[in-house]
Length: 384
Ligand code: PEP
Ligand code: MN
Image 1 (cartoon, rainbow, N blue to C red):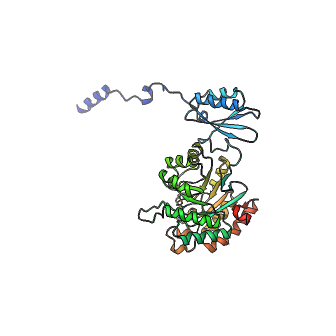
Image 2: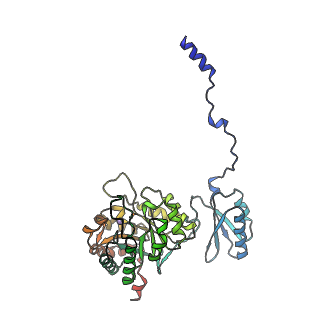
Image 3: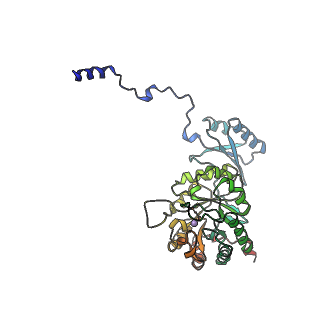
């Protein structure tokens, strides 16, 4: 009897309809992936009025044009959420336009398709991304005047191009030392005035950007902040060169999209930094993704340097991986070096002694020379 009732009941209940069968046809326009990104290439003889015309038309579509003025022609990156499917054809017939290019990657301003030539970032007259490789060296954390000034003199003597040192430190544990703050920035500026080495230092929050930019020549965005979009936009508004470290679990595309945030705010001076990613491997602190150097070179025009200190986590592995990164085409290195690594307040185990750093420099120069590159020299030293 019960079986009979259940059977009757089940006949009365309608089987659920698949969701898709009852959804109305979408009211919003459907864009193809390839319609999302576009570059407008102007004719060599295009006038300012032609360029203005393109920008105005983009504006009518609620899009922005990002100009790159080359020696021969201007190209305009189209920036906006959605590009109407008809825009490509519209632009191709516009006065002064040579042709348009579809950008297949999700980022545009950072894409090699947008800017075929390598970007060279100028740091106090030192080109980053040209033929010469830069070597940035210094302690993980600025600890004292004696420590940072001694390090600056020693790494400069050994041939380093810039000085690194953290004044605001991201620490995994909230109980670890988190840096000297503005006092650390002041000490970095002092070391710069004594040695002529430009200073690279991390900024961790949007509210500190103005302060850090008053002292730093390069603003470092740490791995843990690669997707802190407010911070990226804030450093994007400064125009100061930015060293954008790769997040420890970020894909290369996510990393380039973070670079896009900075460039979209009007700051094209982005230097990427591969610093190792998290993998299943436990023999090293991170796994240095050498592949990423070659991939970035193909996909983007931005300079990329490598950080073998965080990439390996062990001082005795740093030299091999540093040389591998240069051989793979990195535009430079950032290496932790400390007068007394055993007593360093952070990352002592991955910091080179000043002697070991000095011993590594000629090897870096030799590998660079083997691939027809050199090591950049700070301008002050060139004159001396
Ligand atoms: C650093 O450079 O000392 C640092 C904290 O690096 P990362 O953000 O790559 O961990
Ligand atoms: Mn460190």
